[in-house]
Image 1: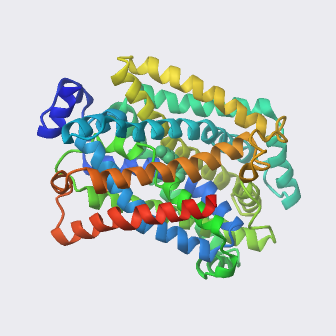
Image 2: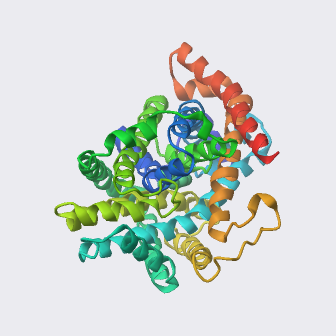
Length: 468
Ligand code: PFF
């Protein structure tokens, strides 16, 4: 380990780091980090939690959380990764040993890696829904359907564990194939093709939504804050989602930062990634809500929202089968690049720590995650009444699927982010931060203050308030 820590200090490559390679360019890092950030969180989750939490005021809080909490933490995570130059856990270990800090800090990354693993287990199930809808759209089954019949297609899918298992298996296999091939040959190539395609396809759907006639109502719903609709739990959901959507609190940005060449600006790249991520979420909202209002659907319909609204639009628009197929392919791409990033930190760690071969560690981690996903699948049908922690008021009525989502997005990720802010803001030496960030002194001091004071206090207050 002393090798790794001295290399963190000197920037010299030790044998482990030399073997890893770096991103081929700034764009490659941006593509990969955006690939991780943009996913089901933007297209599936953002619209439905916005609908559940009343629209405008929630969106405003979410945007504030991105700018004042998410962005500073993203910079801190990328910084840790680049400084350590190893997997998240070992980067933390290298930095603590070099800076003379307690090695226990590395647990921060361990918690993150585990959270990522838990997320992937249910994320893959939703990715499976998207795969299933490609088939539904491509075979013309959406054409001419009513809101009820579209709703029936969705509930039919959820009530069928074997079909869900098949698509979940396919999704996990797609993720494992790219992770097993390694970051240079697999990930970078995949994202540089998939990300631009995603943007274009989303714009097509927004273009259609603009012509449905209820665009104005959707814009008002998303951007006119009505604070009477905002609850404290809505604020926690917005904060948790800021972490989820930017892939924070889990070591993903540390893992990707470890491949970032020294001469690339951490601040600029983090801003670019956050802006693109936010743009995709807002575009998804603008694609979905005009359809919701045009068809008199319920904005607060929950996790099925996009699977019950968009198919309706595809069933009505000219060439809807084609656009529908493309859209769900887009969703799979977005979910795939995020899924890859959820598995990567764990595999990297197994590889370094246990000396396991990448293919073997991918297979092992992937299979355990796949097994856990089965519990989420069953909680959508056979176990839909089973609430394992139902005895606590906070978890009342939450199925395994709901619990995994709640525990990761609303508890583990904000906690991970809080620890990152405290570690970087209060424990790492200022000189190390300045040398990694190389920003103008004014910008640096704004970031430093926000990270030291605002971020931890905001996260802690929202947290405690909700627990009490
Ligand atoms: N950011 C991804 C999304 O919005 O879908 C989900 C995600 C990926 C969360 C990777 C966390 C993570 F580490």
